[in-house]
Image 1 (cartoon, one colour):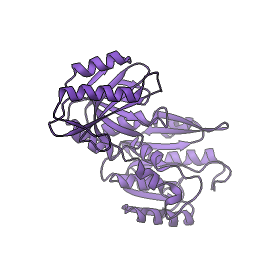
Image 2 (cartoon, rainbow, N blue to C red):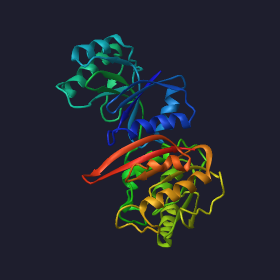
Image 3 (cartoon, rainbow, N blue to C red):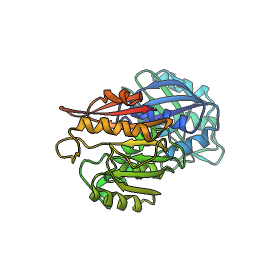
Image 4 (cartoon, one colour):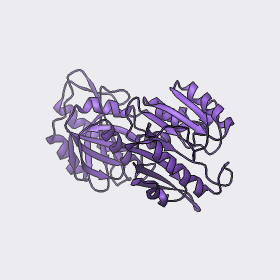
Amino acid sequence: MILTFELSGEHETLPKSEVLACMRALGIEHRVAKSGEQCLMLDIKDDSVKISRILATRLAMTHRIISGIFECGISESDILKSARDAEIRVPSGETFGVRVKQIPRSYLSSTDLERRIGEVIFEHNPGSRVNLKDPDHSFRLLVTNRSCTFGEVLASVDRKQFWERKPHKKPFFYPGTILPEVSRAIVNLCEIRSNDLILDPFCGTGGILVEAGMIGARVIGIDVQESMLHGAEMNLRDYGSEYHVLCGDACNLPIADHSVDAVVTDPPYGRSAVVVAESVESLYMGALFEIYRVLKRGRYAVVISDFELSGAGDAGFAVTGRHAQRVHRSLTRYVVVLRK
């Protein structure tokens, strides 16, 4: 079975890496069938409906997970021929809807394609009815600049939840906090499993820990500023996470060796950050050695930085992923995935 992931497009590389990390975390055997702009197709052997629903509760940078019914060229004639040749089934008495998403925008008319594909489906299933608002079966055509893929939507990611957890809507807010969808995505990059113990040694307001807790992790937050820890507690308590917060130095963690399953953190940066170190660079390096010490062998740490973190190897880590995001002309931030 081919599963197509309709990606959010808010970052060039993070959405695809997040999906693949979740597949590995859940132990789902898969093969990349095709990877394109805002679209990732995986060949899987397990129950696609069950897998899609589980993934939809974890992913942040995916819109929809779609079953693979057919793939074809990008001309209207190819699309309609493929729709006629495919087995698109809608049980008698049930409703369906068709939507078209063009990535990027092309010369095709989405409205016209939706109508004409709908007519083909109705011809094959005369007992069905069209319902575009709340159909029993929602079909989706993704049109890229190279090919089209069509299938039934198996699950949708509730992106509204991240809007509701934006930093300024939480009980405690501090400027510069990363968005919840980014926090969730980088937590997923660690391939965590339910009940894993996650550490953020620069926890700040606890945004990363909130997202980790919401997918079943136990969380520990450490920060050098007590005022931040009080705020993190407020936020974690508000979302019902199982947490512990400690006041401490990320370069001298009060954590036992090889005791945590993952580390995810966004250390302070810029002139406005409070840094108890000779420099931001020395803070990062001191923290990396401590992160390596407390992390279990074979597990992952994800660190956000405003430089490329080239010294991670000196701490013993293997760099398995690096994602760059330009914030503005003079600042690019990096999400670096490290394996012990």
